[in-house]
Image (tube, rainbow, N blue to C red):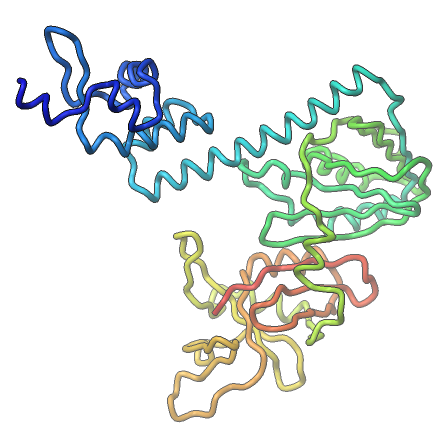
Length: 378
């Protein structure tokens, strides 16, 4: 035993080497997170190996950032890639917790020094509001790890309301004119309330829809029926900044006419050609778009999808053939179909600056309603 112990570290030595206290090391032993290499059966002294110093330092760091004990235990035994996933998940919890704390502090300040809740009322055309909801609903996020994307933002302006939704892969915007009484307001409407409102709009008469925003309390009156709900307590991303980064403030390099009926049929064809790619470890079928002889948008066919250079120029499968020139870019075909269906109309325009730049799908007669899709590198 003495020879063995001489090659080990006492609990005090490990405490000094790792930054954990002796009592913390005892706790993590009892919790099964970091068990000693040897426990003296007579004295009960704990002894640790050199190889346990690194895991002990990891435990100390995870403890400092507040990671739960079960996840610390998993991290100590996991491969590096799994540890990174645990860190990512914990960081999201911390960010959400900070947002919750900020909202709670705002509430507490209001309790200490109460101020009247501002009320904003909007009168909107049922048909215009329905069209705006239809234009953005498809882009609402469904990832439970990103609750701030699980609704539709209503950004009330002096003469109307802008509706925004995003799931990180696409961003959809629309606008409805309104008679507004009250100050500007921004509220994130839960998607279930959005869907219930949309159903009522199908049965609405010509009377205006009345929307009332009173702090986090929401009220919609449609054709004699009333819906109530509470705004989501999350900070929606700065969509104006996202727009500046995605599509910029200058005209796009390419404005490509889109025959919606033809493109929709091509994308829905079970035999539609795609390129096999991978995203986050998951196989992904990529639809590749290019220009036809008249400058319109078309789905490329198998012989044109064999290779692609970094500039988005594709070559034919036949090495002796001439390269197919012109703009080429990849998209998630399902996402593009959603954008086409939401935009409506037989003719749209697609704006893009290059093969790896975000794409904007716009209506010809409405500059306020459009969606932005992220391309997929070929």
